[in-house]
Structures are given as structure tokens and as C-alpha cells.
Length: 257
Ligand code: 48F
Image 1 (cartoon, rainbow, N blue to C red):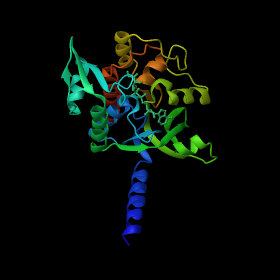
Image 2: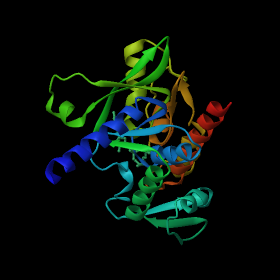
Image 3: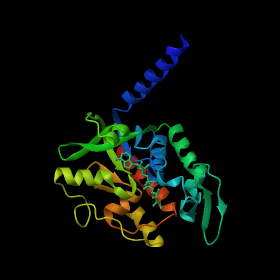
Image 4: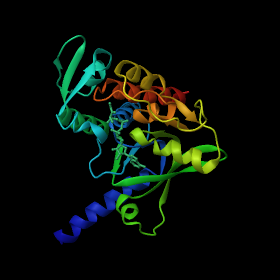
């Protein structure tokens, strides 16, 4: 009967997708702009990649532009990425461009999924798999389970590398440092915490700080600023896109060797 076929179609293909994602090359925690860009380039390079985002609609802080004015500013250095994602843009002034935040977020998500990245929405990453002092995967649970405080155990996903793309809270780095008594590759050995706003320095340093901060664990986007203690940059998004591309290139190089 069509009624049960509809259900069966969903259940069987969903669980196939989940089973295919139990052993990943890269688990990306957080589907903000930096994480989605990273997923796209790595999937395009043939890596097995999945994004886990706690929200129903991934896209992080990109949908709303600034103060819900749904336009975004990017700079010249990030223009090639905007073109790779086929996003319409307008020249503004002094090497700055504007893009529509809804078109661009939708386009990032579409291209990442179409390139072969799997996107799991409503998944919260609550911990990592930590084996022989290396971050080796993520521990996931349904967001509604955590929100309701239900006593239900999570599932485990293994990955060669984990990317913390959780934004300002850098949740994965925090949990790794807190639970395992280890030092991250930062000046304090922990999550330093982001500084107040400086557009130029913030944009430069978010890309500079995009790196492996602990064996098996990379950071990108605002998580990079938070972990290294560099300035926030506000609603200019070029650094987020460039950070996503940088972390993808670092991991692609490493896995292809
Ligand atoms: O914060 P977010 O958009 O990440 P980003 O790529 O971009 C930052 C910009 O949006 C903006 C900015 C740019 O100038 O300052 O803030 O660094 O998105 C982070 C995503 O991670 C998800 C969250 O739902 C959001 O979509 N997330 C956060 N913690 C978890 C998580 C978690 N523990 N498990 C799963 N998803």
C-alpha cells in the first residue's frame, strides 16, 4: 500500500544514509557558513563528509545578515568562493561586494549536499570519541532529546578528523579540553575566548587560526576566533568562507598523502 511505501521509503533510505556515515573521513560539527564551505570542497575532492547541525535548518548565522537585514558583505579575497557556489553578487565599494543572505545560505547548502556531503539536521554533538589521545569521532544525539533532558544514550560516529565549526561557542574544543585533561594548541592550552570586534584583524586572524588544535581536531569559522582569542568581525562573511576553504584544503592535502 502506498501509505506504508511512503514510510518504508523514508525509513530505509534514511538509515542507509546513516549507516554510510558511521565511518567518515571528516565529521563537521556545525553547519554554519564555514562548515558548509568546508564540506563542499572536501566532498568535491571525494572525501566522505557529513555535517551535524543541531538546528532544523542548518546555515548558522548566515540567514539573517545583520540585525535581520538580509544582506551580507564580503571582500575581494572571498569572491572566488562566491563564484564557486554560483551566488549572485553586486559590487559595492572599495573591494567590497554584497550578496543576499537567503540566496547565499541556500546555495551553500545545496552545493555541499549536491557535491556529496551528507547533512544531518537536528543532531547535537555532545562529545567526541577520544581514543589513544586522539579525537577520533563524534557522539551524537537528537537535539529534542537534549532539549527535553531525556535520559537517552547517544550514538557514535567515527571519523579520521573532526572539525569544530560550532561558531562562537566552540563547543567541541571546550568538551575535549574539559573532559580529557589535555592542552589544545593555544596560548592557554584551552579555549581562550574571542575578543571584541575589529573587522580587519578579525578577518585576517580567523583564517590564520584555522588549523588542527589537537590531534584529530580542526577548527574553522568563529570557533577558530574563539579558540585562539582573536577579535570577532561582525557581519562580513569573507573570513568564514575563506576559513572553510582553508580547513578543507588542509585536510584534503593530509588525507591524499
Ligand atoms: O555560528 P555559525 O554560523 O558558524 P560559523 O561558520 O559562522 C559564523 C557566522 O555565522 C557569524 C559571524 C560571521 O561574521 O560572526 O556568527 O562560524 O553556525 C554554527 C552552527 O553550529 C551549530 C549551530 O546550530 C549553528 O548552525 N552547532 C553549534 N553547536 C553545535 C552545533 C553542536 N554541539 N552540535 C551540532 N551543531
